[in-house]
Image 1: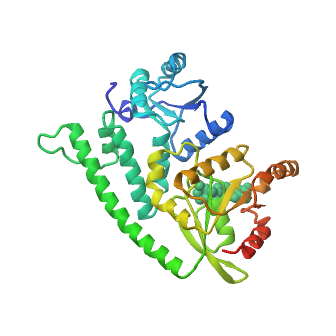
Image 2: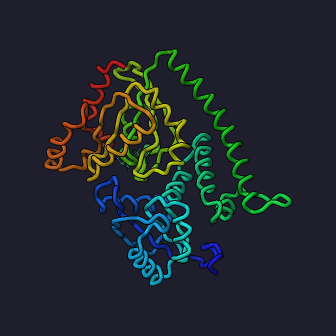
Image 3: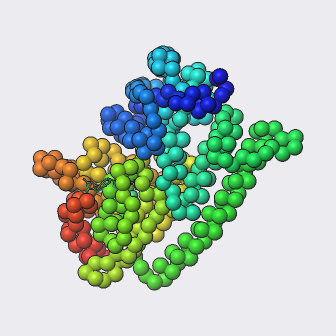
Length: 369
Ligand SMILES: Nc1nc2c(ncn2[C@@H]2O[C@H](COP(=O)(O)OP(=O)(O)OP(=O)(O)O)[C@@H](O)[C@H]2O)c(=O)[nH]1
Ligand SMILES: [Mg+2]
């Protein structure tokens, strides 16, 4: 029973969501972090039976949880007869494997959770290849655990070669798939660099809309440039970069791009997979950093975005666009304004109701791109 894939154990596996608030969590508030985790699970379309939240003071290299916490969790899993445990954190493959053995259930960690969402959201060939690569890199780390099962689920495994062990087969399949994906990506990257060269030669400035996921980036693009980009109350609704022409007073000001959103603890494989897309930010003349001003953790979200930009080596002029002001009461708005002095230059808008767009357009009109 234990070695059977969980999906085959029962028709409806019992799923528990485990939100963990560990030291060094960038979101500052456990409440908000758990809400975001629930949103990730909802976006990934994972049905669940129960939730459990834990604050931990320390983590363990082998098990992630220290002894007392592990006992508490083990008891909870037994009580509920848990088959799948979805954990809000990134787990090391060894921790994941050990936990699966001790708790006798399947684990979905933050990386697999976000990968699931990304797989649903990629629509262009480039996006799909980037996700495929991140997925294979993830499976590679699970090679001595359930790599084969994951590879079967992804449909990338064929038949084992003569005399090949399971591990050798997996290694070969992953290496082949990565090589093929890399080749396809390079072709697409060449096309992208030709487009970039043409843009630079024609002196067309580029504005990039960046920000935390769900901040309203796509809604803002739709509000200020022509076109219809999917905007949804979902995390990572946008994975594929969309570029539009930006006209101000009927004159073309340049191009404006919508980009993939950031989130705290974004798995490293996804950052590297999206590097070529995110590299575009290095060529931007101005970044419009969209912030959800109605989110209690907006300052933490800004910090996460800055950290990501630093990791990507992007240092460009930035305008903070504090969005969703329609959701704030008058008092909340006043309180926010007092804090915004730290984030200049900035504008306050509602991309949805289009309130406050005039100061933004004025800024862009006079900004020397
Ligand atoms: N009330 C309100 N809702 C907004 C505003 N701007 C965006 N939204 C909503 O917020 C949700 C997310 O908006 P998107 O534009 O998809 O956000 P995004 O930053 O592109 O998100 P990802 O692509 O998923 O990273 C949608 O439900 C929007 O309708 C706003 O100014 N006010
Ligand atoms: Mg979007």
